[in-house]
Image 1: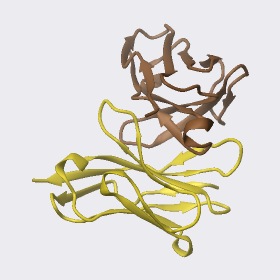
Image 2 (image 1 turned 45 degrees about the vertical axis):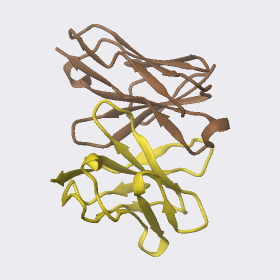
Image 3 (image 1 turned 120 degrees about the vertical axis):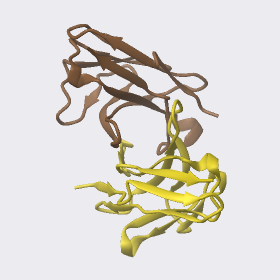
Length: 114
Length: 118
């Protein structure tokens, strides 16, 4: 069965420190992979996506993610966190069929210490 | 950029009543819209896929008669929670897919509607 695992429920980092949010997936083939951020009162915003090609993808707000097929992982990274990055982050996989359904992980809440 | 709105943002209703939630794509035409449900501190669970002009496709375990979905135009989909009960209290999120703008694999999400059933 298709699934997405985000093993960290909460992560706290100091402002200016680096960040890595983990995501592992289970899928029959290489899925589409996404990272979204959810802030209160706002819809989910797409940070970045991987469809094919270069396994290191750059996104908005200074985020990047690396697809590692051997580890079934798609971890999100940022070299220097800003206080405004505090939010809920969701990893998702998308089916490569006509349904375009997304399966979301349980999310990781990022807290940023001043 | 692509904007999806939801109305209302919050709603409180009495048990047994019905509630309608609207999802609109403001600056693009959405051939497909999705409805999700999110419980506190949990992930988004897909409830149904709504295609303009046709019946919605519901995920396994979602009651079709309780969660009525209508996608009557390319910019509007509605979710009606019928005979709502306290266990229906949740955060409902819609998303819309615009093939022309973002590619078939990208969805644009609304801000969500928080439903509280007393």
